[in-house]
Image (cartoon, rainbow, N blue to C red; front, side, top):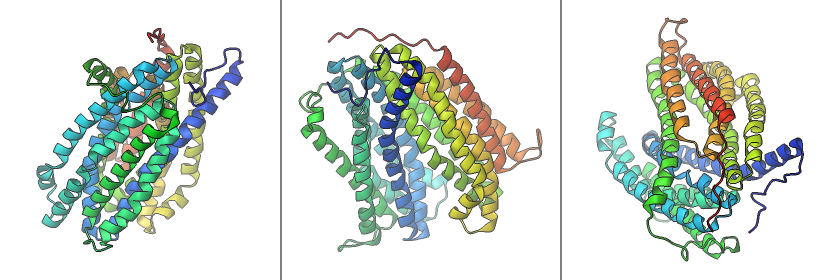
Length: 467
């Protein structure tokens, strides 16, 4: 089998040479992941911009609809992300016969999750009633979700298949098909939103149809590639299909449920903060959202590095290169801190320019400029914790990290943020900045606890292959 995507480390190399080689492997794995993440984020930007040019109601419908389906998707995406370290571990251990059974159980889990997600999205009217939307916006939102629901099986199937391609170290595959999806989504949005080629103008509802169709085009193209590419001749999807195996399903769920719940907890916390800030007025909310958007953009780099790190650690453990796994898990903290300091410097010294790029309103610029100073410090803590939790996922350690993140976010970050933002108990009420201090404190707690676990975690021994 080809080892170019995940090379076996050279035992005779010196410490520095091995470290640099591992960092190079991370860059080769993480670069395509970064492009794929940016392409997926671009879809949201495209939808927002094009729906906004249709009408304010269409933009609101797409925004509200996205806020309803995104947490569900993140939950199931996290669950299915367990496939990457499991498959990468089998790859490292050269247990090739165990790869396709795991892949198929991921497909079954994705299809089951699709039924749950579709059922919830088609019945959100009670939630829309609670939000007290006007009738037209509520109708547009439900129409957007009804259309989007058709693409849910394709989106989750694509996520499951990513477990196979990324797990084998072929991260460029999803990069290509993510870019294809974005390129297809753009003209489809134009056709459906504004009504071209004889079709009626659908506004925000057209965004849902465009996303659904582009998702199916992406996943069907990927399925075709997997069945004709020579690189996958040993992992033929249809020829090696297997029935539902509850033992393997439980293995995936045992690893994936804590990951999905951790991501859901983090995403829901930011949603709660946005609701808490609403009484402070639109200027504060706008400045906070801009700062959060900037942090989300720069976070794509450490997130991609973390995903590559999970793949590499699980591969090394499977290949019984446990000392290299330990070396990488510790040395990469230096690399991640260097990346964090770079982005923190950009946010700290370039806050004025960044605020001006987002808005021309001076009052919003002032709030954004101020919050970006806190976001710079937040960035360092955030990168540290995502690096540590990515290492532990590579070791297939997800349950204790889930508890750590729950404690740090909801036990420390959110309560402290509320106290600092709205009360004078510790310091005079800080407004939105209080939540950024609280979030940073929570992330520092997570980073310290996760980092301690990384340094003390007993690296598991790979089981001998039975193949």
